[in-house]
Image 1 (cartoon, rainbow, N blue to C red):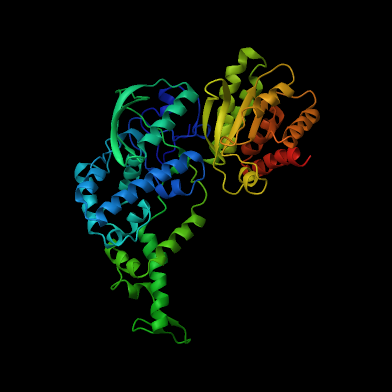
Image 2: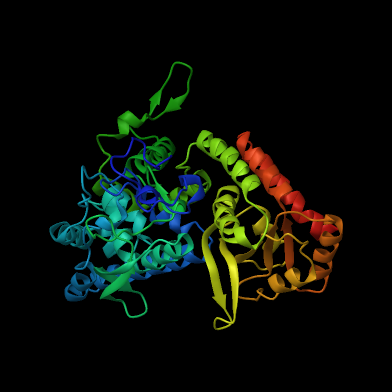
Length: 487
């Protein structure tokens, strides 16, 4: 089983402890070991670049906290700044970081939070309003490394992680109990609130917060050394060449150059020195962010593709082995949750089980959030005008053929807020062409786009993953969409 760590984990992982019978590729969250931390970090930049509803909400909370804190510092409101920073703690609940043995939080503590506040207060980049995001602190504020940036993020979005953890536990039937957790930040009021919440716990009764695997990194995007080397020094090289400064060398070929080594005595790789350059040339921050958007656009995989390929073959066998009929409906539903996660991640994320709508009068088997930026689910919105912030999924382990009632049931789950795209998973069709024609009629009537996924199509997609050909699997699904859309 892949545990998302670069080194073998000690003790059981979350999935092993709760006997979920699922590997990392089937899970939307990082399958952390419970008795130690792993070297993964929550990255606020990764959160800011995602388009799924959960990430957008978390990003807005981070922005609110950062803006309120820096505003208080600039206005000299020390009391307000201390209130905002005073609730930052060592977030042991996620098991992310570099602690040895039992998780104990190697990052923020009370003293560290006070030092961080002092560093922010003394930073010219903060006092001048130059910084626009939390992750930029890593570039210009002393004491803000990847571990503290991750800890800061965890503290600020704790309420979002609580909600996410509870949804995943409901999806996977993991027991939860009421436990105290550190205060959560309330962006509506700009205050921290203490609370008891229902969460899973480890063997010591300590709460566990699950973290979406889409927002973690081995190396967070913002890095002051990379920024200094690739943005600051390269800009200064051009500036000194333009000014024909004393650092310019003329080679025998006549070529003029300024080496990065020659710049280092005057522009060392320290956050203070970087801040001085950035204060005079603030466009460098925008240039760096733009470059990272391109370089860091894809999700960092925490599952080896060979593990995905191996698991795809196992899941294919498991699907074939499930009997058709109501007696195996729960088994089919549970298997499809992991299958769809593995097939569609990172395009679709954060699956929720049997999501209630219309005040509980209707339920959706599975609801997943659309995190697609450039692929088929994104194109449905941008070029087809078919909104789909969420994708509704129904799983039918029927002996008989699915038909109009199942189509009407799924299209009845669509709305402007949830979207109008769904997947109908079933075992087989007596006449698939006729069912596809019904899906086209549903689309033409303005009731939404429904893509039929029978065992044959699911096994085909799993087979491509088993051959380590994810690109072809994505293209294959695109053809299934076009089959209904274009007719």
